[in-house]
Image (tube, rainbow, N blue to C red):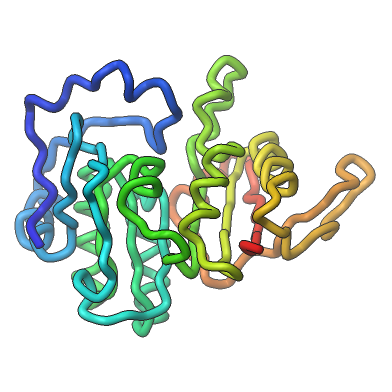
Length: 258
């Protein structure tokens, strides 16, 4: 595999790529210091070479993910959308070396941090797709190919006028349902309470998913409940610690593909 290259000519995003929500907010991609060293040393082995269509995070229709080719084995496959600095996925990959992990992230410095963590922990069972997640779900992954999928702390787009940009929606849930195996697990977490309720309501209404904790955590103010206990496999990240310091607590949800 080769590192996913970034062509400066692709930095102008065509209008059509704004018509549907992206899985990210694009930030600066400049690498320096330890991040640059990590990218140069490890990206060629762990960052997938994805065919692009028009932008440096797009996924062309001919893209294909072959677990045996990528990992050299077939195993329980975990997909994390929005891996950030790699804290959650590297931690879990170290705990469960017999599983395969695929991180989806667009932020190059974040990927470089993930690569640094992998090297530090001796983790070799993670690969990274630098890609817009909805396109990856549509074009790169086969139906019924993923055992477990995570969406932890996606951008809440908390202003009302930006709610249409949120990742978790009925349309996105259908994309996830296509790639999850029957019985596959979708784990979600957010520190934004209003978005947590939206996530729950979207997935409770979706015919392909069942809430594994239906009714749990119900209160007079929130009679629906449905909140999962904190999953022991989700490590406490620096982002979540900062959210706690700001007075926001995480809400967890766990769904199973019917």
